[in-house]
Length: 198
Length: 198
View 1 (cartoon, each protein chain N blue to C red):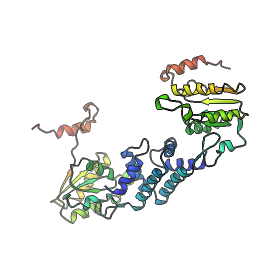
View 2: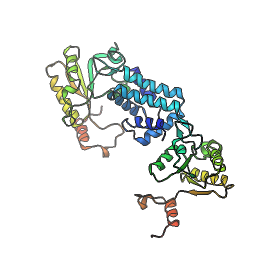
View 3: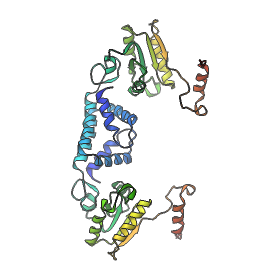
View 4: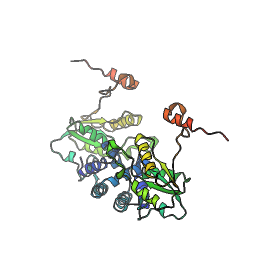
């Protein structure tokens, strides 16, 4: 086998979810792309890895010390939405419905995986709240056992700020979800939190 | 959103089977890798795209003008196994059972997709056979309609070499396949080509 092909397949298959077969398919696709396009891709990867930073206020990925969201003067600085990871922030941004700031934890507390509160950006969040001006902290954290643990941990850490409201996003039946396939816990929550039709 | 992140997600999602969500997950993984490993990966991609060649005898991917298989003096030069693509060649090589040469067509004849015989390396195969020394051509081509068309086209082109045997790989029930899920055509072939137990 060609050493060049072997190298590229080996390197690509180090990526998550990419086995040797997929890596080979990707390598074949690289041959269909012109050389300039391949170089554009590889240099964007290198530039990303070498220059990306974490926002010093919210831990979002950023090109500068402060991310575009924290730097945007039109955002509502009294509300902070806490998410596990950047992908969650992006999902919320894609709705174009939220105008507050974010705080990216970098994961959830998980004794099983050895992730302690100190491994997450929780102190940074508490410091931001202590600085004043924040009136509501929305915890948009997953409903897993780890997520719930993290939620209650943060709620506790924020108890010393009685003027700051700590909320969590609504749990319920998703649009398009079929009731028969929704788990019991979600249905229970959705029933308990039922709303009168106006 | 960070421009660096946006760029890398945009570039990665140009690859087949990689949507924006997967691209984002890959980008996050790049941050977990150290910078040197990321550079190893991107430079292996660039080196592959810039320097890979096609073997001038068999059309296999190669670092040199002649691929390692064609250049290997221990291979049986009287047998040529014709495959659609490099991935097929690699699957056969992985069995360590075949010691002949290969010929990579680069696809199959497909009027629907506008792939004519002249778009494939069939002339190159016929030229190789005309040069002499080849006693058997094994057609290891898929059983699709396009594959069968290609098989009969090549068989016809090789009719002018009466001393060259043209064979095809056996069709039958794969090891581990459950009969109830195997298609009728395969079962029919497997029945017609039944063998006496020795």
